[in-house]
Image (cartoon, rainbow, N blue to C red; front, side, top):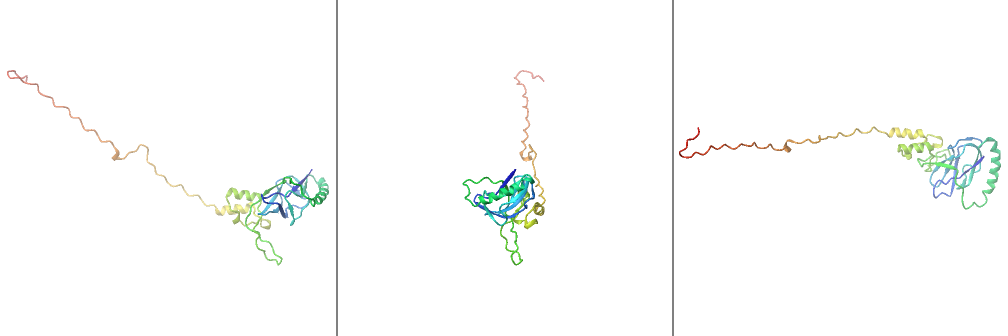
Length: 225
């Protein structure tokens, strides 16, 4: 079976995209989820991954050229035997591209992983590095790792091809930025029910028994002693 690779919509305002580079050449084996090209949108350069496993049969839109969102830019064949058929299909798609596009564009068949980071210097015509363009390429794994480790990609210098930021770059920054956590502060506590001496209840005064009275004596009577 032959599958079309469409120009994806990388933002809500994007109407067309420019292909920066193809990561695969015609005839190369393609795995599902593998990056096959880099697209420049109105905001950043982004990796585009394949939704199908097979062979990159033919490239319809080469690098440094643009295509509207939803237009087929390449074909993926599931088997090597279908590559020639895909090339013939690409010829018909190329002629149809010159006609007006339909009102509803088909859904993009590529997932997008991207993050804007530090600029990538490009070589000028005289061999000296040109000024940064403000866009870089970040691998999907590095982008996911940076999000989990809370690493600012604008501070990461890519070591991959064309200045691409890879997972090792993010791990290196995360290792330098990490610091041991501080020890918890000591907490003092007072035992429940403890009281201070001033709070103690006063002792009760002793009770003095009454003094017994002597029996009355009448004149003329003998007192019983």
